[in-house]
Length: 85
Image 1 (cartoon, rainbow, N blue to C red):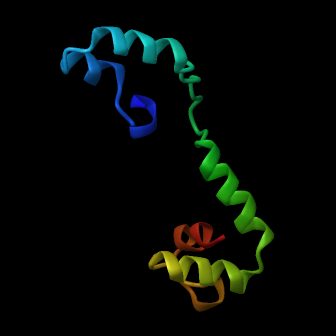
Image 2: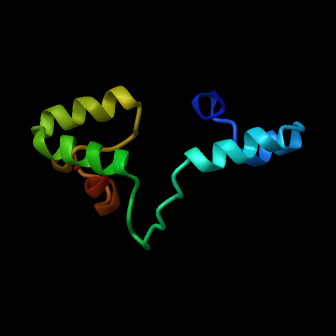
């Protein structure tokens, strides 16, 4: 239950539940080390989905997210164009 609600083993220990903390550590897989420049799997998944969309669909996603990114044909900085897709 602790892993479902996002409680960490350290938080369980602080709450006086060392046994539960040990159990949680045993069932929690160790975090894979990240290399510099890598993103989490959700970011990679979103990037793949965005790449499959047309420019107009990408713009709609960005609009719905409330990001201030200009369409490449509308101008904007190179950084903004790269972020848009």
